Length: 565
Image 1 (cartoon, rainbow, N blue to C red):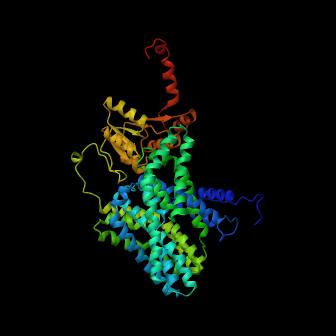
Image 2 (cartoon, rainbow, N blue to C red; image 1 turned 90 degrees about the vertical axis):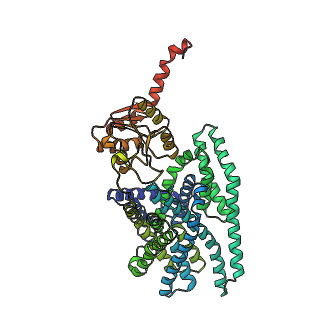
Image 3 (cartoon, rainbow, N blue to C red; image 1 turned 180 degrees about the vertical axis):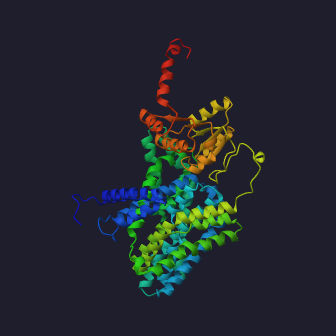
């Protein structure tokens, strides 16, 4: 391939990855399959195993790591220490047993293939740990991060990450001793484990004592500077800085460092704003993670070793999931919770790649083993959205309560945060999308006029404010059709779209108009361009906030001159 006029591997990798990911992600969405398939295919096309442009795999991996950091920081913002401790009784033993079972299955496959004990154990260990990015995407799409089953899955993942941190410390020592033909003494193993656990414990204590006090105060000080740019920069500096420091000073993974950074910030009232500021970057770098996975995948292994690939996929998708299901059930949790946890773990990702690359580098694993791990990762990531959706449908059916007569349904109905949607029993009601300051004012005014109000809100604090006001709430992303259905848009009298994002508002208007052609839709806008956009998509009327403020201020001039304003 001809050299580029400028040596810009970083720019080329980002541009090629994002452009192709967008193209194939949009195509996948059009075909009604997960966009993840498009992102992975984009990675395959820019990887070293296909002709044409080849992106820098090392740079892509580092960019993907930033996505993992931001994603885990976001999870920490939604996940308190109380949540983590509430599931420790199942997450710790459950994750340990599941890792042991999956590792044993991988070892058995390696033994059948004629590999050494060390190679088989490393292979099995790589198949045992789930991907942070894939797991959290699945939980967030279903709005179940903060449910009991979501907390168990996330807690399980944290324990897996800690186990992999320990493995990454022990593997180089094992490789060095194996090269010398010696067995690793038990005393060396115990010392290495003690040092690693000590570093992790010290980091956790540092974050819960110092970080818990310092991080919120830093952000509060930045807020008082009045610069949104500095606030955004502060959030990113905290997330990335703590993750990097945790890795360099305490030998803790980037993901765990970022998770604890988010968790100590979650107690601040600025946590929601911090989440909003990191969202665009998080999504972009998460896409680069999937592109980097695709780049590592060699499609020819599907032809050269189909049976070995199939066996590895069966271990990841079925063996590991069945083990997790049985473990959760043994702890007395219902089938629905067991299904969610097992489906969440039916894939492998970033830690598997790190383990495989480290082991190949020190001679504990051969290229064939790494190729099988990458193939299992690629296929399991592609299958996971479908597996997760199937598990959730089955769970909904087996846990569906018996129907109640309409007169027995209490009102207002307020579903638990991020739980399954409970359709409203209201009809002829007025829907307020977004319960911030504008939505709150709309609800107060319309309730005073005697109108029944339903709020649709994704943010937990805003939803709680609506419930405290006595307003029925539907929790979720209103762009999802099931949320609009649960809000009974077809039977509504009016729809108020009070969110500040004109692009998202347009999508809401378009979907609502398709469901109810005669529904009056009143939309908040910030500019004439936004007004034209939402009106073109079906809005009945718009209110431009800045214009109304200007008119109201101008109308106060006579009163101000008379001293009566």
